[in-house]
Image (cartoon, rainbow over all chains, first blue to last red; front, side, top):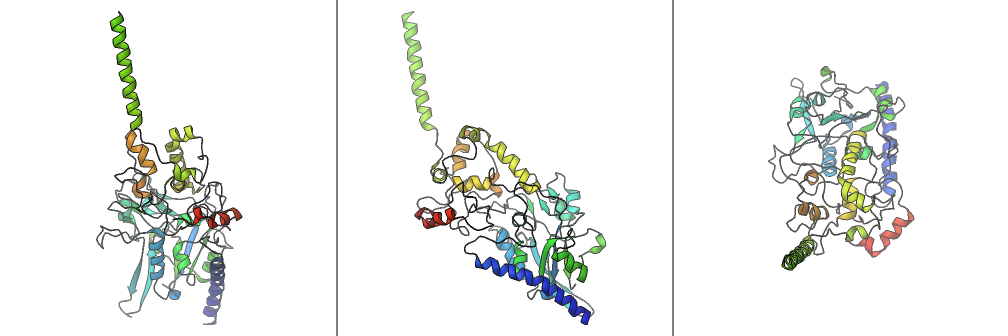
Length: 248
Length: 167
């Protein structure tokens, strides 16, 4: 028990940093967002490098709403989920909450599921045009400029993380282009990470989520994972996901 | 011989009249929103007129694949500078509007170019979140796509002017 408490203390200490960063950013007037200490800023003209691998650690026991606020933050950030002509089944879904119940004990928990940013992404394997791609820093995304909308990647993804846009859209978010005939999914808020900011969902649940560089052993996420572990969903597929969970 | 020359001149005259009439029909893109922010485009005018699509194509791959988000050749910055989010009467300006008064549409329609940038990309600056979208081209700290860091003194001045406050 004391060991668990020690783990909790470490996790809380790590999260304290995030909370402090959030408070600090609130002080600055207007929409100038503070850079996060977890996301080192890269010179704007330098390409991303494979020395970094972005990852996320979600402690589902500390998510009081099962991740609903994270999903809402994602919707706001990228503008999905309210496409005017789509039926509820057709709506894009970059991120969702999944409730899991043990048949025997009836114990249940809820976790947010989105693109797991695999090291060996099946969606990239099957893409006929190279639109489904993994960036050097481990972010898996769709290059919509060359996506032909065949939806092979949607079939290949074991996490059901990808969606297809069926209709003409207007007034998309400036930083998150979405459009008819292309597949889309969580891109780990690539536009924010490139500026040294945290993804929108991480900002929405600072008490439960750590974002950072998995390749850097001194980063908070690596430290937390070393101390507490971090399980993958469908670990049997050996995809080495970048999104890890605590408390599954 | 005289008669033939007269006919030639008459024909030339008619051609000239015709050309003038055509010239009057060429739509002029609305440069006013951009001129309010900067005297000069990011590249010389003749160059950007002819090669803007090449610049944009190179930059889009750099951005998506390599994560380079410099503002110089970014489509977002073209839109921020050249397109006012609303018309005088407050209606939204869209690329697909019948009026063809969107900065990009005014030329593309005339020359018969069909491109699909705006099927995905926003075709006007975002005003709901970025109330003070008006900025000077040289002021990097308050560029829409460079939100990190404190705003410079110049930006604060810009905000206090009526131009910065207007929407």
